[in-house]
Image (cartoon, rainbow, N blue to C red):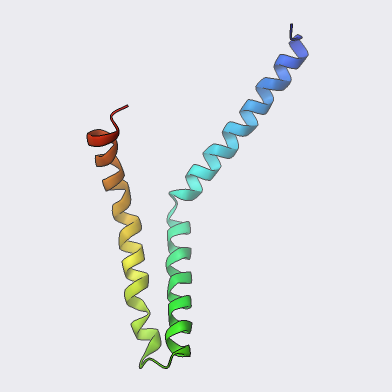
Length: 89
């Protein structure tokens, strides 16, 4: 049988895990994360387009970055629809 001290340690471990999960969830849905990913997408595409000698690579890199940003803004809507209509648990 578990001692009171062991139970208290277990509760503290669970609280620590819950805090980490909450932090991870907040990061996953944050605008900071979305903005950074859009910026990195823009930079990666700009460098790639420049490397393969596409005209106006930095202007053309805007399209994939904007597409990514739009997808991150619409995914929560579709996730909600999926949860309500398909998942239903």
